[in-house]
Image (cartoon, rainbow over all chains, first blue to last red; front, side):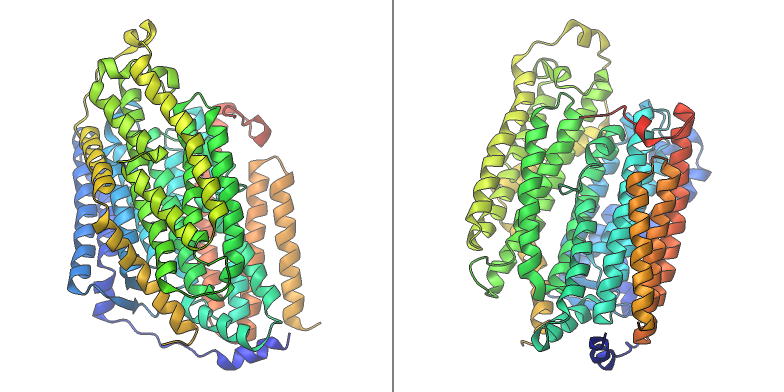
Length: 528
Length: 100
């Protein structure tokens, strides 16, 4: 292995230093960490009756973290600052991901209380573990080093394994948790083996340094390729599990169906977005030189993911399981955006086109947070009222709860990508990026899949508006009001409409978010 | 064979044994142990690369992997116990309340 000698001479020890600024730049993460710890402590002190107030503490923490992230953005909108010896990067990509994860956290808190109280799930622990999960995702979003990617992904995943099995009296919950756990940690092992090989081939765990090493080795010799390609494949498999891409999706339907519904909503958006953030950080910042190879793999996986997710979703009678398969399909749409990173028609490094690709991934993830938690939110509403989660349980919802039916219809139209909802623009941006990268075939498959998906989304709408409510369902109906759930659904419906009618500000923010990645890529390739 | 190649081959073999164990064994506890084996293979790879480069990054990574593996063990055993409470025996072939 003589090639290692060449790397050895180039590896330089990095200087360790911490300053007060370092802590300034992780302020949002720090606030979430303090909130999570406070929730554990206050939960112990408070008497059982007044623990409902913990939701306010959690919300305060998330909103405070959002405010801190916003403050850092307004203080310097073009910020790109490396902290903690390259472990954490504060730039606009970090910011956009923090917004996604904090909104996920806020909505996740709002939809939980009524459902959890009915099933005797301890709320304080649920909130604090969820906050740790959000913290892990935020670390992934701002990671500048493989170690930060690993620790962040694990912090968010382990927390979600616990949450999945939180309904201890429910057999499905434990079962879903076990399946998720075993496959999840196996994915972790594969992922970290890929990180070991990446480290072994480049001599560094810092993503920018890895990018530089691969670029320089690529230009001088070709005998490195097999080792680094092996590493890249292992990393892709690991990330594939985390984002639930076919064929690494087998845990998804059972984990989503078994978990308490508010947790299904949370884990169908948060860890998925974190997986994409990690994928983009590692692949775009660390391995831009190999982008011709990994985009092809992602494009193929995207086709499988979209098609399997949509086709199997048609056959589902449980709305919860249908939403699980639909979330697999949405992973596929987002992967189309990632695959658009490289122009399939010859090599070019047009930054505007690449920016379109990454910003479409970001904005789709944001819109997906709202519409998917919205659909799960109405499901929670229905389960609070009468317990069931089958398509038939939606029969006649428009009669006895017209506003809930309208909100569900809005979320489902958005998931199907029908204008004027946010989901339409999400798909529009992703497919536009693919067309600009000459991936017309992928766009066509994606559009056909959208048409298929409309079938099973509209099936629920038809049940709500045209089928009569059964007598059995009427007898089970227990009117339950929840201030938090209503608030969450109002926020979601407004957000879906705003993103559908006026997506410009969010799009601008997503484009800003994608920009710092390409400065890194250029620097790695030695361009100004 | 140089020493790094030797340790890397060992690491690859251990990783493969772990993977086969996860896929073939039916007891969640044994599957969990196999995954621990995979993580140890990763640690071996990190240490041999790290020794070759003479930097500490790989060794720090090993400490992180060990810590995370411990956290996983705690959560995993808790989930397996919860599972056991429901059905008094654990075997992944019995776990099929949800299908489709």
